[in-house]
Amino acid sequence: MFAPLLLLLARPSYGTQHVYQWRDAVTNKQLTCQRCPPGTFVLQHCTENNQTWCEHCPDLHYTQYWNYLEKCRYCNVICGEKQVEVQQCNATHNRVCQCQDGYYSEMEFCNRHSKCPPGFGVEKLGTPFENTQCGACPRGFFSSSSSSTEPCQPHQDCEQQGKVVNVEGNRYHDTLCTSCGPMGTDHRIPGDDDCEQAMIDFVAYQNIPIRKLKRLQQILEHTPRMQAEGTRAAMQEKFHALLTRLKDGSPVTKELLRALRTARLYSIEEQARERFLLR
Image 1 (cartoon, rainbow, N blue to C red):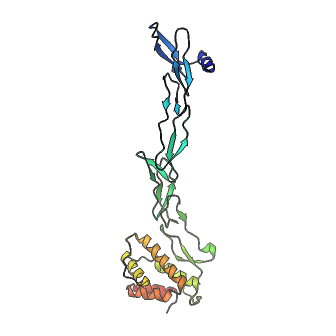
Image 2: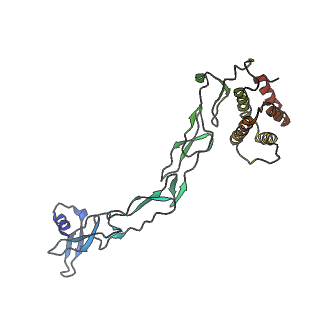
Image 3: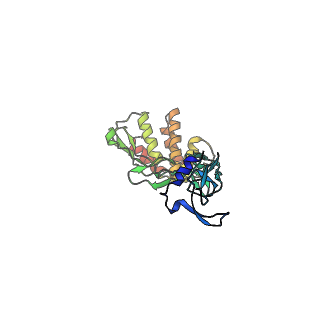
């Protein structure tokens, strides 16, 4: 059973890293013994007449390096919460665990990868060992949502689509295009869906204070309920989603203009009327 190990150990080519000093209990002499290879342990130390006897590690035990241990180490690593096993316990290695997908290790705990907020994109994806790395979207790029995987996206080119720019893009939202006729002309059809969407886009992404955005939303939803706090970008996205949802039910142009007047946003109301020839 041990013959292959003994033959291996008997070879004279080992360097000093594969030997150890051992005092023979019978003769009291200091001996130079061969270490046992990974996956084995010392069953019997060498004597003046015999080389070291090595034995294979039993199940659930291991030795990772050349050694002179008298018993193998127990595989004592247990995968915890949010961890997965990436290497099984075997004769030469302990069990290895790491954080599952979407998590990274910090202070011995697996934490969920951070999401980059709107206006920021993922520059480096998170790994089981590192958190997500985010960066502000540069000019010409945007991110409108929180994400742990998505980089900043380029603004769309309206001209390539045969359309015109309705709302300039920024780091928080894309450029919004429209085919609602050239601005300043009467190439618009009352109730036209594309023109109505263009007006919604135009109003939703104006530089409206958060307090006024909340007021507009209350007027349009016919409710006194106060909206949750958030950034202007987040409030604009919610307001835009509300207007689009209302449009799907019925034309919203007149109602939106009334809401702008009620909220005393006269300048934006006037800009919308002039831009979309609504007199």
